[in-house]
Each structure stands twice: as structure tokens, then as C-alpha cells.
Image 1 (cartoon, rainbow, N blue to C red):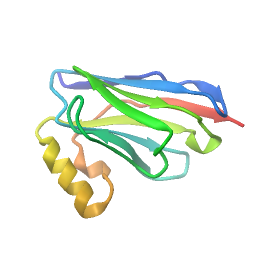
Image 2: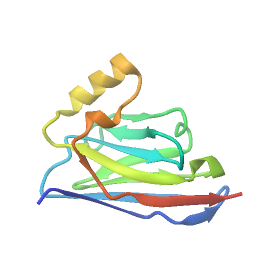
Image 3: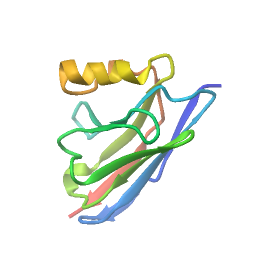
Length: 131
């Protein structure tokens, strides 16, 4: 059974940190990324990693504060210096049929990843930051 399971969401004070985890079962990641969706807003890309120990990508909202990493079948998102604007449901997305170079190519052409780039999604984990 193909499954993505996120964990690590919590309520924290502004300036705090959280580490989100995304574990895959039933497949290897291929393209994998974190997205988030705040109430009343669209889903936006946050970060992606192109193979464990490989290159990575950060959206403007994440640069300098978030770090993505991968260990075997788990992808992590370390989030530091959180602000109220980071409050959202965070989703892990992956597509095992899509090689990582394909996602890198999409980034080059579009400058961002889109939800349609990914076939499988986790259930989401809520991050709430209070100021």
C-alpha cells in the first residue's frame, strides 16, 4: 500500500522550532517535497530534496530558516525561527514514477513546484505559531 505519513506538527511560540517528518511506505520517493496551506489560501511549495544528500530547493518563505533532509524512507523539514505567517497545514508530497531530474527541470522552467507535480500526498500535519 502506497502511503505517506507526516508527523511533528505542533503549536509553538514565534521564534520557536519544529521538525516535521514524512515517512513513505510501499515506495521510494522519487520526487518529494513539502507544501503548506494556510486557511483561505492556496497550497504553496516550501522545499524539496533531490535524493538523500543531494541538492535541495527552498521557496522564498523557507530560505534561511528551513532545512530539508532525507534518510532512507523519511524526509524531514527542520523549521527554525517560526513566525505566525508559518501557521498552516503542512503536507508531504511524492511521485515515485517521476525521477528527481524531472522535478529539477520543472523548477528551472517555472521557478517553483506545483501540487500537480505530485501523485501522492500525506494527510497533513498542523503547525500553529502564536506571536
